[in-house]
Image (cartoon, rainbow, N blue to C red):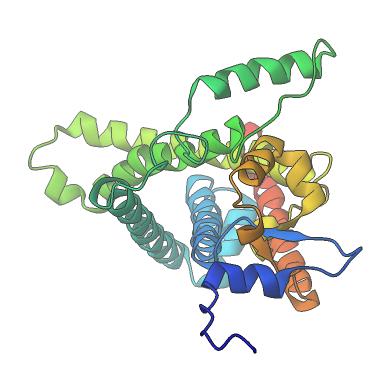
Length: 295
């Protein structure tokens, strides 16, 4: 006699894993970044490109390319408007992220936010990975095995916090100078201008000369790392980039829950257009900035 007992409905993770499970011989894909995380990153790099372009136009306003850009949008007043607009949007995105971290880590006491293999907080393993990477570069040791986040990814993450505190606060101090002049001496406001300008230039040089190379132009990622756009990575990429996380998730029985659909062709094409456009803009700004700075 057939079993008439009702079966439990599958959980969302089980349904996703079953639906996304590939047929024999097909490449498996695993979720790495959620839609919310990808949207936040898109907001971050879009506003940063806007801040970099407008900021360098104002800093090197005597350059031919800066004057041409200003004429194209209606003058340096318009350049300043777009600079402030990008600053406000980036600040809101940053505050949303901080609020999310506070809610998850402090209010909900979610494990792994501030410490552990899934945390963005640096630990002793990151120090050992850094030293091990140098030895590997020199052919003196094996390549380090990384967890969910490598040490340079954590550095990039915390660089945003540094930029928001130093560049952001100095920018708002200049924007609302009459207010801050009530309790800051004149020399401090002059120092704020220098800090904002120099730290902004440093951020541009780091992102366009270091972050782009580490993320997109290094072996196994060239010409572009698509994971931040599609949100998924193949099993081969997972094993190569984060073998310790793969093994940990396998042992804990959580690997199947990360199974995801392969990215659609439109996602890949759209990601390439957006990604290559961002890289092209960034490298162009890097060249123009260095030319104006040393010229």
